[in-house]
Image 1 (cartoon, helix red, strand yellow):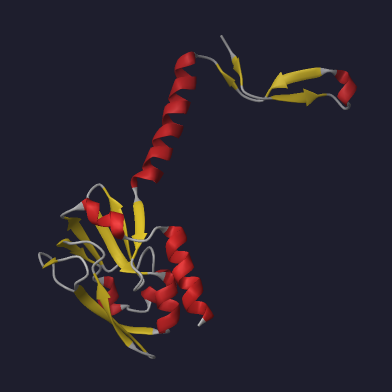
Image 2 (cartoon, one colour):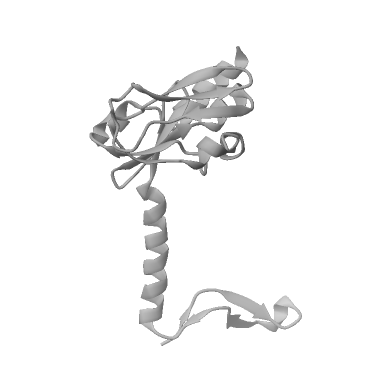
Length: 173
């Protein structure tokens, strides 16, 4: 049995009255497969939660692993980043503790842990190319990945809307 997803009119005018399906499912199994793949893509996009500190660090939590770095707003305020100091794998930090620093032509700043945990990966490319922070702070220029000890620590952090408000207030001053 065929399932009509959408119709398009055939012929030159609206009066021809001829309609044909633009897409057909020949089996119910194909339709279910399409729905399942769409749901899985949506679920993957919701599995990562991003939260922020007022000091402009972010954490992207995905399956108990937090990816941490500084926000795009922070890098824009710092200017050209020239040095990033990061911890070693296996180091453990508490929430709010400084774990590294970032230096630019304008200033130097400590970087703080949004959540506590053990460092399981360090973005070594930042050691050789600290300027990556300026070009892609929220993605390729993450600083560390941590095995998060207590995911409930995320509850105290800022969501996207609250963080944007903090940035607007700072930009106004």
